[in-house]
Every structure is written in C-alpha cells, then in structure tokens.
Image 1 (tube, helix red, strand yellow):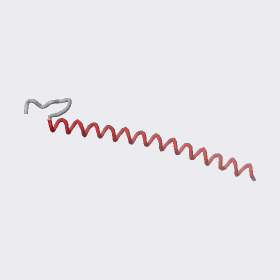
Image 2 (tube, helix red, strand yellow):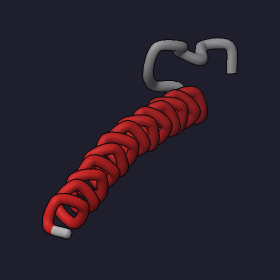
Image 3 (spheres, one colour):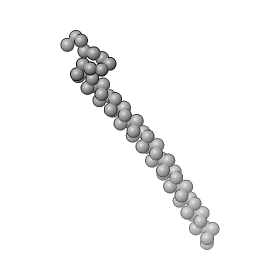
Image 4 (cartoon, helix red, strand yellow):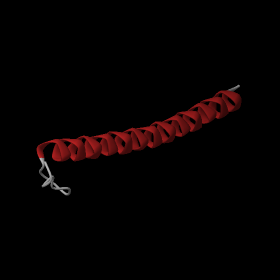
Length: 59
C-alpha cells in the first residue's frame, strides 16, 4: 500500500511541475504580447504628436 501511495503522490508532483512550467511559458507569452502592444501604443502616440521616429513635417 505504501508503495502505491508514494508513487501516486510522485506522479501528482510531476503533474504539478508540468503545470508550473506551462504557466511560466504562458506568462512569458502574455508579457511579450503586452510589451508589443505597449510599443505599438507608443508609436501611435508619437505619430499623432509628431514626436518620435517619424517626424510629421508635412502637416
């Protein structure tokens, strides 16, 4: 009995580790999306105000 219960908890801890890894990967992906959205927002603001990479000198 002890052997089956310990191996059972071992597989549970392995599953927990897999879930932790998957969560970490998802967190990194979400951060990348947020950073990308932030950069796009900055670029749009820069274009609207004429400040930034693309200066609007024709307006």
